[in-house]
Length: 438
Ligand SMILES: [Zn+2]
Image 1: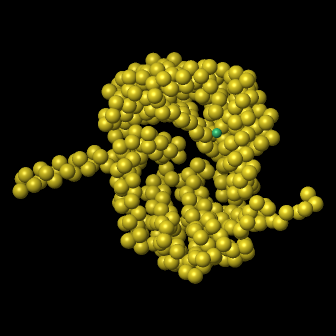
Image 2: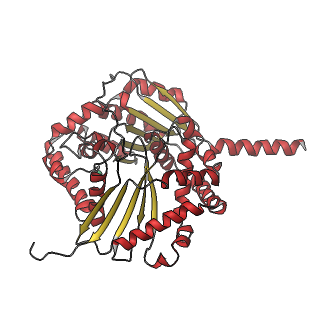
Image 3: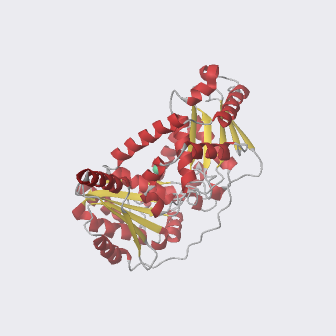
């Protein structure tokens, strides 16, 4: 009996320690926040730096600056950092979003100090070579061309966010408007860098074989401790809830079939209502299951509507939004597509989801998390995304456990809270015939 109890306790403690992210944090006097997690499964370390600034901070008429700066940051210091990373076989990347710019490197543990050194230099100054700047402009315009200008759905999405939201609430595409990218100068990037790249506007996340946290603290002190905090010119956030339903129609000859999307405002702030936010994520995972639920609700309309996709975007602060869109519509009548979508939402509000559906999604998440926990790069990205969405460290630590404890009643309560009010934006994409005179 005793032995059995001991065994149970042992298993419970293994599960318990494994189910949590063992994160610790400290801050330097200049405001730099450092979050660490020791993981000794392989002798590598992931270093990720997250700047609390993104495309919503692009100056007026200078859209695309944050993203451009991210591109140029690989070239800083005459590419010395990139060359070093290549020489040690590091994995490296960067991204810009509405609210953050992120750089990360995964290196063999013994090279972590060099990463600290280069990242500190990148925070302090950007030397911008005119020729590299121009070459990169070409690359960015090509990226824009691929994602937006020659993609009708990309173009429609850009038009939708720009018309649907005010700029500080996310009504701007990360890449920027073509004419504005074209006119950007190196000084614009310098201005953005000096306004936002500061220790008090950054979080470093280090995961891996880091030895002792105190070693990370001394490295942080050595390379970042001497930098001064800056006074950040942060404007107050504007609420992203329009006062009336906005209807935006995008017509293009490149669109062959009509489609329609609804955007709902999430009426709670995820960092305050942690459980609700997780309930919403689980709910949407249930609704996105292929061959499930939504297919049943669609009944015979399934043939007209290939798929309905639900996504939760947390970056549209201070509240998130949920997008619901018909993926592949096979109807050329937009009113018909909209009727189908509205009908599904209405039915959904009546029936709600069932425990079986939720249990299946929870099992999938549990398995996905188990895989993720073995991959330092994946964990870093996951935690960075939660940090940049404003989640609290104590909530992140237990996120997987909390997710498993969410009930079907909580999911259905959130379903009604989010989907009962009218959508804030209705977007329609419709085919347009070519006008041969143009
Ligand atoms: Zn890019």
